[in-house]
Length: 315
Image (cartoon, rainbow, N blue to C red; front, top):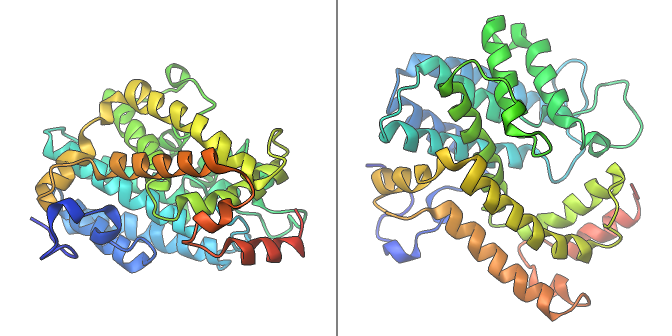
């Protein structure tokens, strides 16, 4: 049983943030590797390590042909959130008796690491930020995996599988229209799609980071987002869509998080769903108040400083 940051903590006080600091890339990578090694050999994780290093260079502006990440919501921290969520759900699946190969497990984690690479601008793309690709970023991310298979050290067949898994994160696509090579691949795509939702919405600064998402949506030209407050209101409706997706389209992922946390941390609870529910309950209270003082109730990031900085650099 793995209990890294919660020894001496009462089970009722345990939350995602007390188990692991998702801001630390090294911690997320180490935790993901340890969970992987619980089911497969350490040597099989090498491809994930290579993808992680490549993506870290990509997001920091050190990958040939690309600029540094220019989106503040879909950033490197978001990748860390989704990577560890994928590793945890995958672990829960293996604990439940599913039989994925080491290569399939590694490819799921690589897909998590690359699933938003489509937001990254190429070197000669100098107009705006990656947010302008909001509606096409999933296709661009899948294309990135295919284009850079050699740099990732992947056979073409693995790159194609990773691309198919990434396409499952597109909520604008009908799941039935996605093409997977097997039942196992369908399940892995569902795990990634669930991790993408749970990872971001379970993050302790999710509500504050909605301001970043507002700026991305505004640049993408989405209607109905005429103020930062509007995205808070619309997020409550989005939550209903997320719940429906998790409980129907992605129903195969139900219970995976709880099984992981019960076995690895001795906490028989779905900490992801709890975190998301807690965030939405708090958000409902903020929205029910009024639009004039919502910033005072979202204190985990300095929203006023963010808006002042943005005022000098409008999208």
